[in-house]
Image (cartoon, rainbow, N blue to C red; front, side, top):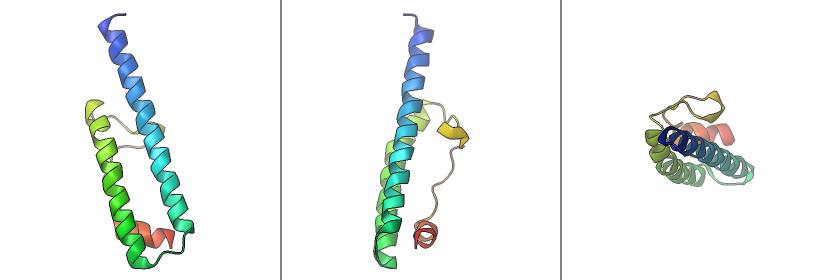
Length: 89
């Protein structure tokens, strides 16, 4: 297997992992929105989860050269915790 093919496979694996992580975090936020958490608890938990998401996805995005996110989404700053908390309340 040539280097170009190995790079293409590695890139595809990274893209798939990034998509799976995005889906996982989306599911976590969906579940959180169904819980009866107070506004403060929701904001704190949202902030922790967003930091976790950033820590998981940033190295992948950097390795892929900050390519567009799976699903056609472009890399952007994560939503602020207050925005997520209100949107899920």
